[in-house]
Length: 231
Image (cartoon, rainbow, N blue to C red; front, side, top):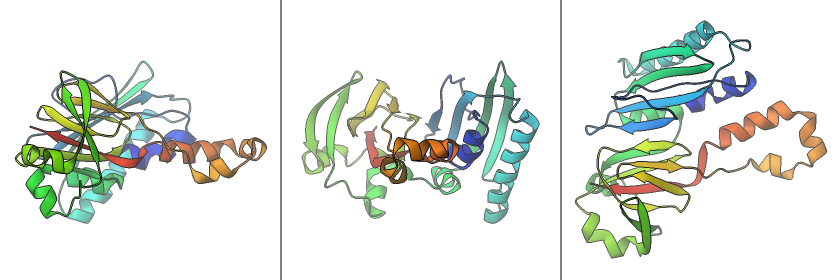
């Protein structure tokens, strides 16, 4: 949802969504359930001078309805929506990780390692670090840990966000990831748009809003996906 809404958010300066989950979150988080369902928490400042909360709710409802109508099922729903103290919070529930990926046009996978390999997921050129008590250590190729992780689960994500998994994290790729506890990670890597890198400062300032929109959308996307093996 945050990717689809990013244009709206940047045009209107600030915006927010929060996903439904068993507990309250103070930052944007993807919560992956044991059975493949997903809840999304997107939390941002919200300025009702730029956009009314009613208009925001209507926009979200329309996007979700369009997706559900296309699938023929109610696969995404809003469980809660609230704007309070200049913070907007919307709780979104997805029937599956696949629905989240399709709705937001991103890469997100969660399943067993065996299922991932059947689906042609490739880990051969990836370097992993071992995770224990939030600390990352070592440097391993997939062939080094293949037997150990063969019965585990894997999550693949290409967004800058926070992810909560249903099991304990064992190995993780990508150095731009902070393990905050045994089931949670924060992914912070940002990328810049090629067009903004090619522009001179003066050219960029001519249309600051367009540059900000482009950077905001791309900042959600990782240069390479994060791969997490978990129990």
